[in-house]
Length: 480
Image (cartoon, rainbow, N blue to C red; front, side, top):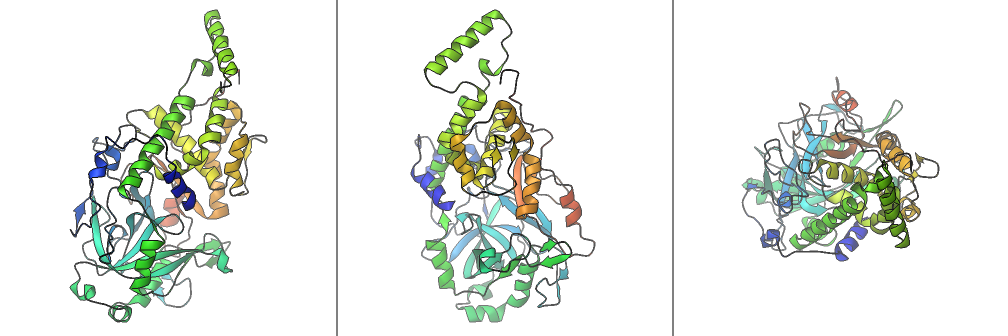
């Protein structure tokens, strides 16, 4: 997927960089310990914008800050998701750039049965490095030690010094036995810039002598939760040995994907072009999408149909959507994962339409297919064939409506099959939430938490896969 993303960035079309003040941003390392995140990403074009209740443009926590890493030193910027003193764990949604609630940390027994009770209070800060993706195409994770007064609220990023890294292995669902069952990614380990005693450490051995890595490792393997099948519990996370700082820096410079200012602007402009084409050529209602009522409307209707047929252009909604997906399906799949689909306030109809088609396309990119001929979602993941089948997309309007209507149920099926808990987030408004506007779908690992009086099960049981206000506008009528 990351290869296709890079290819997409390289093959961009209809790019206009001239009017973008973004290019004036500096790529130099920001040495301030705490820096305010300026709301640049959502300020480029009002067609793609995310604002608060008060109308203030929200910052994009993944794209707006600079990663801060240079070849001159092992410093890096990061955004916190888990902090000491707070039992809430958050995740970040790349499309909206907002943090959202994932789960509550709790005291529990060690799923690996190697230690005693794992304490709920985190001894670490967990966050992500802006503009940087890891091996599994997720924001690059970082563990920071020695930090005090760090919060995962507020529009700030923090800075730390990289000391090491480890391989984090993830078991998506059930019991992972074979090495191939686990997903592998690198996680950076760093120290807070304000801790002089830790900043002076120069080698891995002195670092391990200074911190209680054994206890921290236990928390890292248990706090994210575990897998459960029937009554059996299985580890979901395994933390590898600490690696020398040179290996961590080598990974950061050669194997992670870091997006430059120019690449981000290209991504933005290209996805805006894709979204515009989707709305203008497919989503906006035409006379052909409504039932002709008068004789004059019928004549005009027939004339338009004849003209488009002679020009060999798609006529009805299902034909227009099929033509779009055949031509721009791959680009749409990339944009659906990386760029916010519109502006919920300025043009809600446009936003809702693009949002639903984005999710529809993204599910196909991840291997889930809606079978137009049979009229249902395939419960078996078919991998890359799902996107290839867009080349023969032939759904009627009625079947397209059905496909969209069944997406919430399909998300529940994915949860059981792949251990991915999808949910729709409005303002992440629950008491434990981040209270930031997303208006879209996010996913977290579907985990079990071995806590006494665990609240996670109750909280997750109330999560919904469908918005009460963002409904799909049906396209079926008596003619098609």
